[in-house]
Picture (cartoon, rainbow, N blue to C red):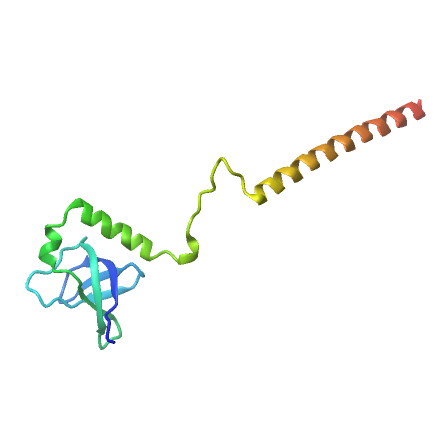
Length: 140
């Protein structure tokens, strides 16, 4: 199987012979575009990794025709941005919002510990005040 890798990126430079694309992996790649119409600076989209250049840089080509990029709707652009953001996130970093009505077991344990510590602190203060009071009475 010879599957091509597709990454999201943004065109950052079109000067000179090379068109540079900053991929979401923070790698700077060279765009190999066989079409006559090349994407403009700021274009964000999908790019297919074609290989490496002689100097070792990654060579990419547009995964979608650039003509359709100009016809993209706001929804398509937002979808690409969202997909790109999610693609960069590791699987273990999913955020889970705990339900406000059902506290977790750890939360209940911590609240119980805080209540017990508060009660013990109150007793310590009471006994300390009693001892200080006794010391003052003994000295007089």
